Length: 467
Image (spheres, rainbow, N blue to C red):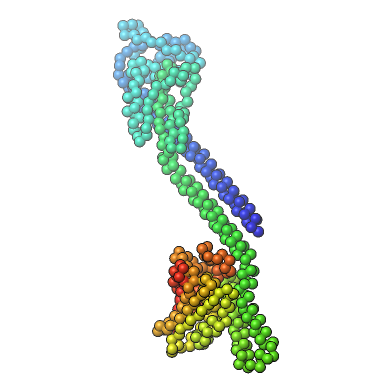
């Protein structure tokens, strides 16, 4: 059974870790996706800023008066392209007036579509009359990139060679704390002049975008861990209970040995014809036999109450009886193990009234307290039982000179199955039900139990019952 439980625990642990790993992998990919979406948005803002920078320069260039001639050999009509340039700049073309003629040469790719050629020439002319400066682009970028660190740097030589098209943006670096993207802006594409705008993208805005997803994932991970923890706790409880079951039979044999031996002694007495002639002794033996049988029945009932009927009300059969006589009987029938010397002393008030309670359960309570006092003491045991009446309250205390209980364990000894790990003799029998049973019975009588103990000096347990 234990091996099977451990396998179940191992499989559950692997399944939980796999689920957490899958959730973490999904979050990592989602983080990368959200980061890419944000990078696209920032790149779009940079491109918009570049268009705004070009618009400003173009307006300044249109304020200048100049005449220029475009010479080009292509499949397009030169006059048609010249008209587009004229309409774009509002410049007057006067090829005959050579005094104001400005001439510059552009190397155009004749295979480019007309729109691309027009854009390239448009930007080239603006660049000629009003050259690009980094400070103007920086002033335009300051608003859309507010709160972000960025810098403008020229295109590297390897970016300007080869005739290839540059990407709109690309990652420069990526790590868990932040990413850096480089956005290209070609202010003179024909001459392959441009800049990179490096923008640092911190992680916290991405996490803010993923707030709902992160909370849901965190909840699911905590739920899985909680379920795993509860399952592990349950499995360990099952293992612990299984260990208790294995020792239960041995403990039962030990706990039932005393009443069985006592009854065997009484039967031997009754089997002797000569002893039976003493009517007074015979009557006392019969009464003690019935008392011991009631104790045995109550002990079995205690096991049922403490193990099988947890949480249900304890059934009591109250009656009026003389408590000193009950105490004296319990003391007289106490089984003292070999190797121990026990001295009892009792004290009762002179006008002790009869008590209304369940005598069988109360006798078992006293028997448990006395047996614990003997069990957890040295070879010489002194047990003192004191009964007091305080108004409508009955107080009964059982004290000993035993090992004592550590302060940190005193609140635990009334729990089911609790046994101190610091017992001087680990071979002391028991399953930790005695004091739990005592508390259950006394509380069923609407009473209370208290404990006072000093290590090495002894323990006093006091029960209070309403009269």
